[in-house]
Image 1 (cartoon, rainbow, N blue to C red):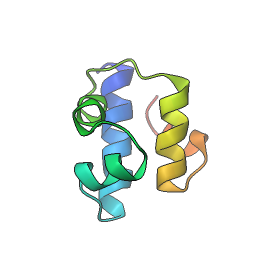
Image 2 (cartoon, rainbow, N blue to C red):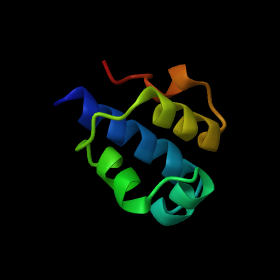
Image 3 (tube, rainbow, N blue to C red):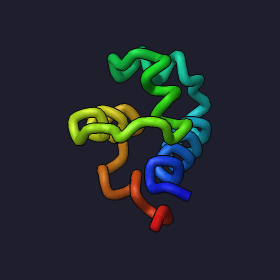
Image 4 (cartoon, rainbow, N blue to C red):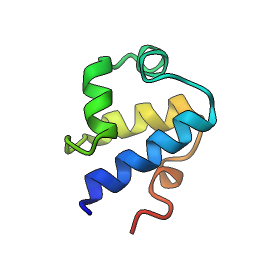
Length: 70
């Protein structure tokens, strides 16, 4: 499995643990929903700026987004 796919699964898990839909979460972090959905699907090589937006939106350190994906 590609790292993009593992990263997407990880952020999807964290988002769902918070009870947020993709649409609500994308709105919260000021990201297009279709772009965010493609990140969760592992179809994007996401930038550091957008990784930071996701971490901030989930209220976690960036490092937590990468736990258990190696």
